[in-house]
Image 1 (cartoon, rainbow, N blue to C red):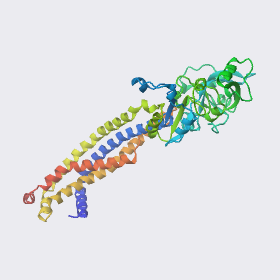
Image 2 (cartoon, rainbow, N blue to C red; image 1 turned 180 degrees about the horizontal axis):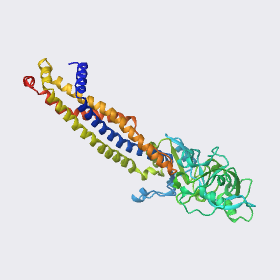
Image 3 (spheres, rainbow, N blue to C red; image 1 turned 60 degrees about the horizontal axis):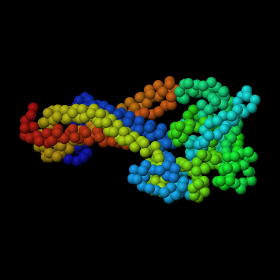
Image 4 (cartoon, rainbow, N blue to C red; image 1 turned 90 degrees about the vertical axis):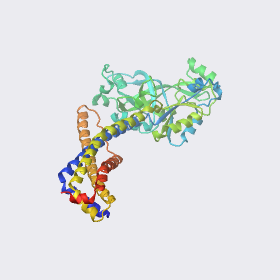
Length: 476
């Protein structure tokens, strides 16, 4: 029997019992819709987590430090004795080596130090000193989700003399009373923000200069004189004027890179490097051989978070200590894998129930079409032809039910997304898509529907093929 004849005959048989076959097909579509809705929830939650965590700038970065400063746990466990002088220095040579690695986007030092910041608030006659932690930010930090709520603008360049401050520090600069509410609720008014944007804040810091520099240490400065004579460099008090260009509610990178040292103000990391500010680790670094500038910590930012492990292993093999947030979140991927698995299993239960409807429908069709099957076999149709006919009928219900189910599942997800986002807008929260239906899920759901339908049609097809044509023709 030709394929065209099979399809035409199967279509005619399905149309003759329209109500029963339609209900069976609807059962399949409901099962597929349940499967798609469940799986799209898991996919949406995973995509949301990847999107949010990816934008945080934590999952695509590696924090590198020298083992001269932090002896590795592996050395302690294996009781190995390694001389500090044998360990590589985290200097400009190492930085250039990291930058040349495949997949590395940028490498920059983690600059974070105490500084004096002077600001003249409205109503004050002169600048008032404020002490706090100051940090450097790369231009790539602009993509962090923290800056979605930035009031003002980001740095205009990697070395621009500009500053971005936290809401908490902004309240301090404006002499506002303490706010005990959560950080997310400590909003500044537009008028308060306007009192800061475009204004000048003076950064006072200690600059490291070579002893042969033109500017010598200030008189009556014992610390500077001691550093100059013993270590070959001078500590000079400097200051620079910065323009406040933005105010953010939270610290970038979740404040994880600085531990408990929360930053109050941030400047471009290129500017921070050019100012050559002395850091607590500089005195220790001067006692060790290095090529160029030494660093306590370098941040290696990658183009893709999937390359973190490969680059991290290369840096470890060079003799440095590394840390990435993925070290502490290896179970996250496993969690979403099991979540998708369980959601898929529960979503498939409805499709399994629908397959029983296919079996029932086709078995009833055999009873009603015994005489027809007998005539077909008497005219030369083989057992294989009869099986093919019932398989085509079952597969047709699977295809139609799969298409309807995918459409229904997508519609359910859209309705839930719209309803959820309406609720989030009412709470002044950013909208998100919790239900996501990727193209691979559409194809997989339709294919699974066809497979289940064909499996359900195996028993009725085999039963129909075994009918004796003589007995079938005698059937009333």
